[in-house]
Image (tube, rainbow, N blue to C red; front, top):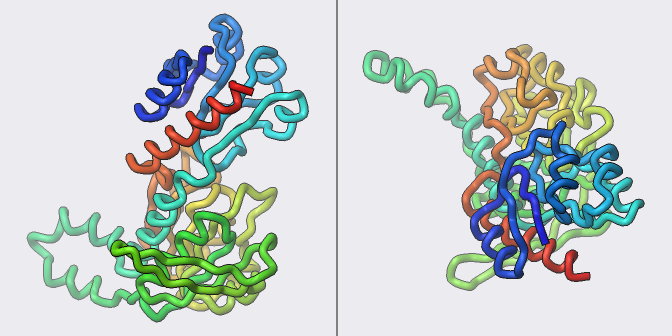
Length: 318
């Protein structure tokens, strides 16, 4: 059977599909030509990442397309409910990228807390001539150990971040509207030892009020989850991290809060208007920025490729 991986797929994923007897095409087909290409080439499974959109028009135009697979977690680029309602199998890989996204969120926390984003920009330009001045300028960072991390959205990524944060000595609290009972996490070490922690859920307001750092790990929202009212409840000098979805944070309210001193800074991997984030975000020195690369590590992509390949193989065999 022919499978189109329109946004690319790791070598491990391609190899696994080919071992199962499938033909994998990794050409990138323009969105406007996608339906015709699928029909002309007898494609039965489509694997996408975030670039390709699989909306109702594509689904209706491709009656022989059996499987739509998202090599990643978020499926807001796919009309999932409609596809399933007309008998198509829709898959994703909820496990494979959790470590990479959680580590990126932690990286942004460290970057803002120690002004690494700013010093990395200035050192190449001024380090040779103004080293002492830069050292003085960036000598007022803060430690993460002993601080409170509030996690909003406590799925796989949120739980992984919690374990990372606990490992470096942070207190962790969380809010998730779908979790009402305490959650037990197991922090595993390199030598086989492990320690279990049980965390009780908190209300959204409790997380906002008590946290020194807040990290968001929620799906796309109809309106910003964190807006001006929520920011007002946060601790003075708090740091906000968003490696979830663009639009979850009111970006104008965030910039205003940083500029008026309410927040110390922010770390953003996702933006409301990708791929053209507003200049006010890009030029703000207190914001650590990355171009939506949470899951973009070699390790995660290999795991994603293998996991989605296995899922597609099972779906096509049914």
